[in-house]
Length: 468
Image (cartoon, rainbow, N blue to C red; front, side, top):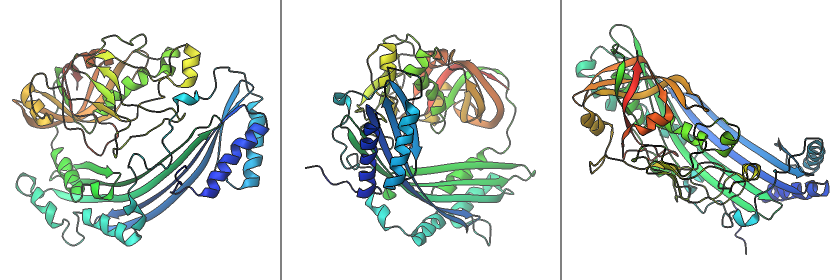
């Protein structure tokens, strides 16, 4: 017997979603997918230690994917009342029948879909503690995180940071937000697939602005999140944000040239994202991928291995099925520099005549590469190993050409010499192409943040072109 579903979605709404398929098929749709989603978000915002705003938002949507007479269309509504929903579905099917034919549009074969996502709780991403929170507890959680105090400007666990070389620096403002949410989604199709995914999230973020003795202002930002209330790292967010603001005081110009580049774990995913886009079959079919014809070839440095750990129990980003209902699996994306897979949904599989996989990455994990140095590896260790270079802690605009892989990014961070940071740098630009950059990978750390869906650690590349 199927285990009863529980969560935000009600039994009445489930019956309404099932009714959508019945109506669509009666109106002439040969295949139908329905996605019912509900979410609730509560947030408590603090400004300079005082309560600034309390908000609560809820969302509900029904997405229809209709396949009729070789034609395809998607539609959405937030109505679930039986009469209105039936009218909406009828009109949607009528619209699809007016579209151009595309015989490659169809549902995935039933044997490819997930069979075990019955309750939405199978991956352990739902925290029952969420159900017992109230507005007072949320306010208290936000207040505990603040370091700013209305009377003297700063609370105890931040005052020590402004001592010593930071004397004369003033905290201008602290903006902090605590939030928690729950997301519940149910996907079903006319081939018999039914899958549910339910997860909670708890988060805190802080931005602090300081003023240096010369009147210039600097900001620092930090955040943490977890699917579980107990997993949230508390009373460190604002302190870290303050430290990051203070570290940016007194930037200096840096000469242009080719240097080692250490990219902090908080922003390293910016350099991985273009790889996943280029490995998407839609980009390849449309001639907008710099990794076309790369499958099975050694394109990157020997040390680069990226796996998709989609089914990691209790970890952010984990999922049992993609938006088509196709079963996910833990798999290699790049193994020792060799491209191991393309992301290919049902449509692109039929369009290109290649085997289908999943539509995209779920929880990418870039594995440590230490270049022969055993043990843990973080930004500090990499700077020691490199000697000198630039430690990138932020990207300020720029882009990557998806067809060629050529990139240009504005960066900020720190210069380092003899393994130690010497001064902040700003207004520098890195340029190059993605394939050459990833062939120059020297180290990949072991310090990816546990709170992130993309497990990308601190990275180190050699001979990167900087201009300032």
